[in-house]
Image (cartoon, rainbow, N blue to C red; front, side, top):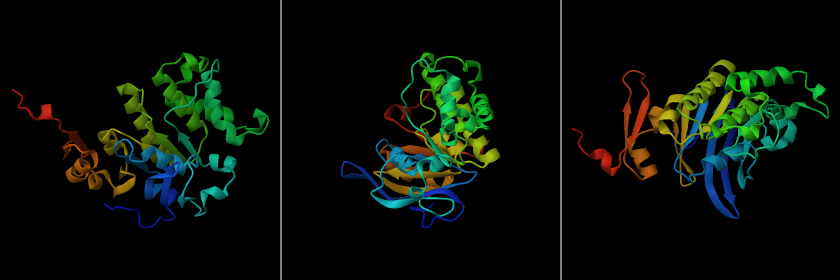
Length: 277
């Protein structure tokens, strides 16, 4: 377990070094370092207000950086790339997006192809295949002709994920992608995240609130507390009872599932300590 990533090596597709981030002159992230590796899932976890989403947005060039740098795989600062070229390398599924009125699912997924298009859609010969594949893997093909403003929250979340996949980038950033989804689609989205890393070599950075989901899907976790990286490492290294209890301010028990070998966590409230008969 490491309290900071001491150095960012060439294996990282996207990395942030000594990042200081803030809002209106108030610093909310202090000297954070993070690296996203090709073919690996990195989960950012921590209490509300710990800086997870702000850090993710900074990696996506959507939040200004007060100090520090964001680097791409070639070692160059991300700010050196034109916006269109950066969008061919990194995409972000944000927590919320405006829902267009009267636009079909297929057209919204097609928005993901904007970095590849000129003035005419014919400039993007690979677009139709990328759009169809993105809809297929997210399970939204059957609703391709439905207006997105008629969809449920869970359906819409899958459409936005399909839009990101259609962008076909080697780095995918996801900010709480399981929000609004029922249990089945939470599991399917996390399975898809693993598939993208394992089968397609995508570097995935994902903000998650559920520690057990993070332990199940991530190769590496970054634990944030009060705007600082408290620990970085595998789930087994980072998810210790002391670290989690101090970070979240509630007793959290940690164990290992005997069948899967995965770390599992259990927050203990007052009523969970009573004896069950």
